[in-house]
Image 1 (cartoon, rainbow, N blue to C red):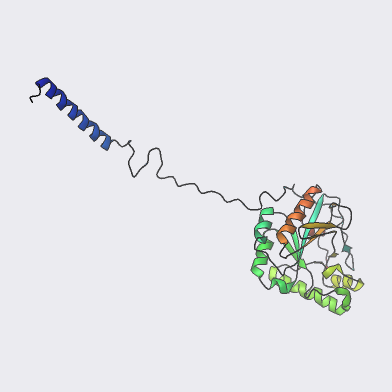
Image 2 (cartoon, one colour):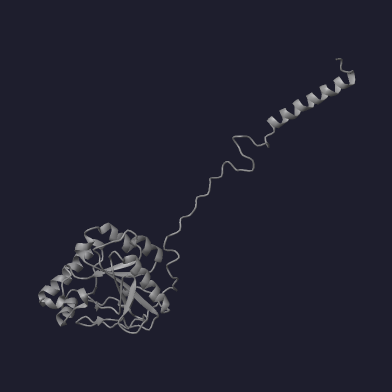
Length: 270
């Protein structure tokens, strides 16, 4: 078959145009390739998701405690015993005793909460893991004493009570760099000798409590709400996370904010 000249010229021109198009597409820098997807900045790193604390939705928001605390404490000898810290400020105090058990989530929780607390610790418990306690303290707490062996104070002579308080304060001071000046007697049990021994060991006050938090429940000694100046008693134990959250919510429900206990019982000259 013979192709007419006009048709042959048209076919040749079309083939030439197709070749030029393919070559242009291969050399066009704006065209996507297999190694460089279209509309993607190869130099930009992929965004990483920011992990959110497991406690973020469980911790209430609090206003800041007063810059100038309403202090009603008056130094005395023997040391005063407080069940409720004397103040008209809308504050309450988280206090945590012992230290035998540190749940794995304790540090994350106290860091996330970001509120002050006071730890009444036993030196033998701290000695199990002083670094872990230091991290907890660095998260916003102070350390006070709870005796050396957790014995009931009225069962001991004045001399033995003094040894319990002074020895524990010295040991905790060596561990954390600041000697305690507040004392909580084990089981909340004390007598006149306890107050005298506390003063002799440099304690500014002996502290009891108004609420006990256990198993995620708050037990009130008076009424059904936290009052200004109340100390809430918790322990380092397996239920710590539930107890800590329960304490925070009880304080929030009362319209109060956690404050640092030591700000309301300033040191007396000794």
